[in-house]
Structures are given as C-alpha cells and as structure tokens.
Length: 177
Image (spheres, rainbow, N blue to C red):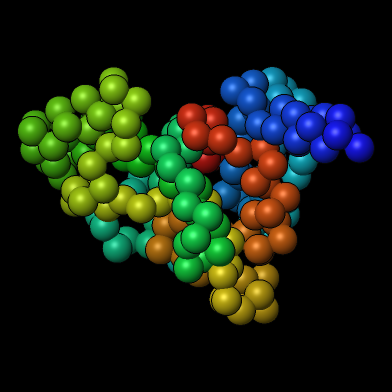
C-alpha cells in the first residue's frame, strides 16, 4: 500500500508540465489543453468578456484580451472557485498601448521589466489587470451557458476548472485568439 499512493501522486503531478499549453478560441468558445499540436483535452461552452474579445484598451471595457500570456499566479480560494491569473498586460499589449498614447513610457517600462523578470506585470494600469481563467464559484450556470458575462476573463464551470487544474501550473503559456 505504501508504493501506490506515491506512484499515484507522481503520475497526477506529471501531467502539469511546461510542454503543455492552452489555446482559447474566443469565436468557438472553447479551451483546449495542447501538447505541441496535439489536443489533450477540450472544454466547450466557455464564457468570455461581455463585449467579446479584442484589443483591451481600458480597465472596465469588458473585453477579453487577445494575445499570448503565461499563468502568473494561482488562487485556489477565489470567490470564482479557482483563478488562474494571466500575465496581462503583455509586452505586445504594452507596445500597442504606448503607440496609441494609452500608457506613458514609464508604465510601458514597468510592464516590460516585469516580463523580463518573469514576474506579474502591473495590474493597476489604464489597461486593467486581474485577467484570468476562473470557475463560476456560486454563479449561475444557466447564465454561463447562455451569454458571455465576464469583465474580460475566461470563465469555465467549476467542474471544468477542476478538470483544467490537473494540467495547469505557473508559467504555462496561454494563447487567446
């Protein structure tokens, strides 16, 4: 009996690896767990921002940002059940925002520096923050199935976020298209 629990623990933790990445399709409303080009798991009927997906320019615009991010932090005690925070805004987001005059050079440098240090970029800029993948918590699953309702995050049911949890670790790449 002593060997089985240890082997089970090793096997369950082995799935979360740097080879695994997430693809979020904001048109199909799916999240795929990928290893290279191969799909390991597909979660359907996800929800995104109330105003769809695109270039996020302003905190509170309810847009899910397109781009490539990393999981920057994990909160297992979130009011949304579980929260995988993204490294938003990315350097690409910061370049676009700087070019459009949405952020100043100092803010741009702070975002770039955070990414260079593999830390969480500033979450309190005009571009917003606290973007992630989360469950429903005590939210209404009927609403979740019928509309995009988040302020820019990607929402899954609590059961889906549990399924996803076995694959997710900090630093895993997340592509939102």
